[in-house]
Image 1 (cartoon, rainbow, N blue to C red):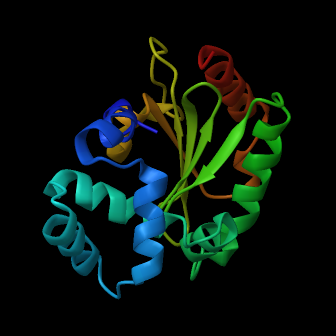
Image 2 (cartoon, rainbow, N blue to C red):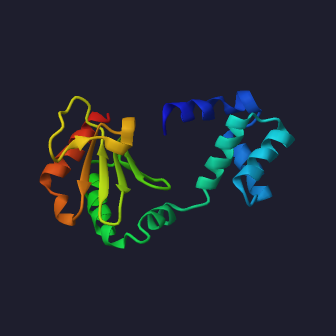
Length: 180
């Protein structure tokens, strides 16, 4: 979770009068069909500012999908890439029992104390692996972060299970160690 979102959630009780869990409970009882309906309800009925209302509705919807649902939808039409994802996950889970895998709508974050790996099926033929390796120079294979921006420092483009080799696993392990 990024710092701005974490700060917003921590400030929510003071700024809105309720915790995120209390707001989620209120929204569950309403079951809005559209995102905007939930936002407008919180703004009009509870006086919540737009920023908090949008965040509350977004976070309450994320809960409605299981982790497996999120991953399955990422690889829909890209099923050929799923074995790459599984091989990457198997490798990072061996690093330690403090590894947390957090699927999102379009990617999967792998977190220790902070995110150190990001797995994203980028095209029908390629998985992009984002790594957080500050001060590590780029190479032909270990490229700059590209579309990941500041979420990662580097990106490796993976097109087959064979690309998940010892060199790549070593880079993921290095990112894991730096995420202490």
